[in-house]
Amino acid sequence: MNDKIELSITYGMTADPITTQLKNQNLKFKKEVGDVYDMESQAISVLCRGSRLLSDNQARKLRIKLHNRITKHVERMNRK
Image 1 (cartoon, helix red, strand yellow):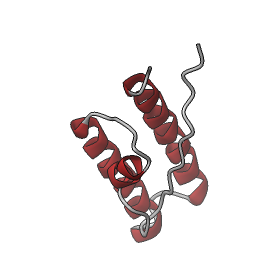
Image 2: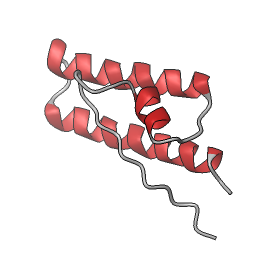
Image 3: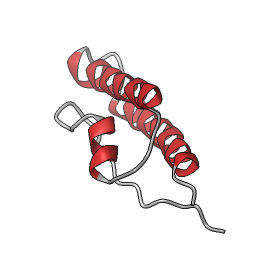
Image 4: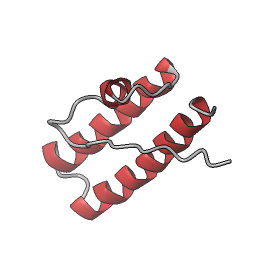
C-alpha cells in the first residue's frame, strides 16, 4: 500500500498560509496542527527576511524539516 501524497506547498512571506494551501488541494488535516504549521512557517520567514536572525541556509533547513512534518501529518490524515 502506497500512502504517498502529492504535496505542493509554497513557503515565504508572500505565500498563502499552509492551511489554505492544504485546503485548496482538498487534503485533510487537523486544524490545530495546521495552525501550528502556519505559525512556524511565518516565524521562519520573519526570522530570515524580517530580522535577518536566520541565514538563508538555516531557513532552508528549517523549511525542509517543516515540510517533512507536514507531509507525514497529511499522509496520516488522508490514508484510504
